[in-house]
Amino acid sequence: MSQTVLYYQKELKRIAWRLGYRARSERRREMPLKLDSIQMLTSSPEHEVDSKLYVEYLLSLIPSETGQRIVRLFYIEGRSEAEISKQMNISQQAVNKWKRKSIQTISQKMSS
Image (cartoon, rainbow, N blue to C red; front, side):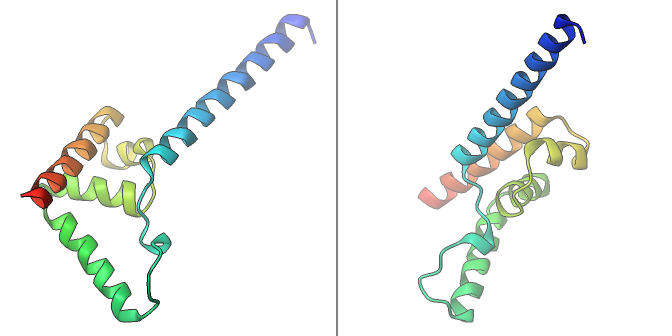
């Protein structure tokens, strides 16, 4: 293979690694909430049901179904914004805005 082809293959691998790293860093920073990864103080079934009911209550504070669905998919099911945008046929930017607005709404209602 020519040097040029090898050079561009190497560059593409480096770019792909950077994109993957950036996505992993963003996911870590946003720390998705997964019901199965919540550390329970007690392992009683009642406590688990209470936690799930509390999560459902928090989701019910979001006025729109779209916001509720996006928060559920992203934080609870652990899907990426790209996956959600494809599934819901909206842009990734729209998913991000819905997510931020919904979390802000929950925060405001919890503090009032």
